[in-house]
Amino acid sequence: MTFDDNLHPLAEYIEIPSGVTLLSGKNCHDHLNRVSSIDISSKFLKREESILCDLHGRIVGHILHADLEDQILLVHNPENAKEIRNILSTGVPWNEDVKVSTGDGAVHRLIVVGKNPGRVLIGLGIEANDLEQDNWTEFFDSMICLLAQTDEYTAFEMLIPTRLLQSVKEGLETNGGNQGEADSWLALQSLTGKIDISIETSKHIPFELGLANLIDLKKGCYPGQEIHARMESRGIQARIRRCLSSDKQIPQGKARFSEEKRIEILCSHRLGDIWISYCLISTKLDVNGEISIEASDSTITATFV
Amino acid sequence: MGLLDGPGFSLPIATAVEVVDVQIEVSDSARKAVLAAIGEQNDTHVLIISAKAGGCSGYLYDMVVVEKPDNDGFQTIDIDGVTVMIHNKDSTLLNGLRLDFRDSLMGGGFHMDNPNADRACGCGQSFG
Image 1: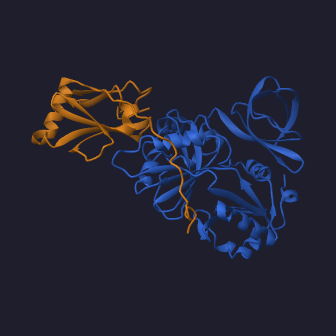
Image 2: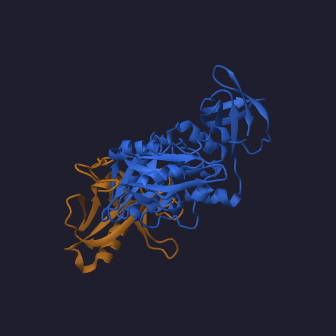
């Protein structure tokens, strides 16, 4: 499948609804490191993703970090923000300096994606070739990094304070960019097998979502580590992620398809005239091609991509 | 100014931690072991029991003997001459804790029995 028809010749900017939490204090890195699935190292402007899990190894939050030295800005799905903040707020040692604050609405996450977003960014004084994938670069009072680069498209990620959001959007439009829809970016992510931090993934096992790269079994204990280590050593995975294309949106949740087989739809997003859905099916099922999914009030035909 | 600065800019604290009046039980063997650890500093030093995030199961126990902290966030419990302090923010996690000490070469030392724990790690240091 080609995305070509759906890609802007220069760039679209897409605001992704996000929950924002700020960890601050001189021990904020130590505290996050104790509960995170990866080894958090303190490096100014580092961009990382991590997972917070419950003691059963299931995801509570998939988090994007921006390291601001004595603060860590955490961007995540807005729906499970309360659970994420509960984990971060409890278990702060009595002799450590850690503060957990709510930043919803204070900072916005923008994706700038298209065939040539560098042409749009240059108008804001940003040289796209200088941007790195694992590090944020400051511009004005915002931050930007390279998010993805393929033969077909390039995507950049921005974190922008509310007071500057409108002027950044206007700057992007002045330089040839258009406002795009979150759906098209999220569908593109699903097609490339990635799951955006904004997708609700709580209660899922990281491995089945292809997030094994966010699990560091060498860092020592973190909540869920024992379960993850057991899964990794056994090499057994009950479900695998797949991508479906359909003419209609497939409702989120568990459903059945041909011959009572089970499927779980994590998300379904519009890309042009079609809907792209990210789903999980049993690793024992060898299915390809077209299937009929029994939704609550209709049957939806979808094709594995 | 920066990403999180600006006139009047401040973010609200995320979650207020619940505080309860803590009650703990300390076995006689644990009390003696704590007294031995504190030694002659019993007038000035206390045992702080706390829970910090981390470990396989969500939280890790921590016990330290320190000079009595000048911090009004603590609850003080006197156990027959031993002063145990628990910070308010750990109160819901540690209320009802039973502290024991086993004098054994294999698996000896302090042991926690926590009614708030649904699960404990094999090593006994982590609970959730």
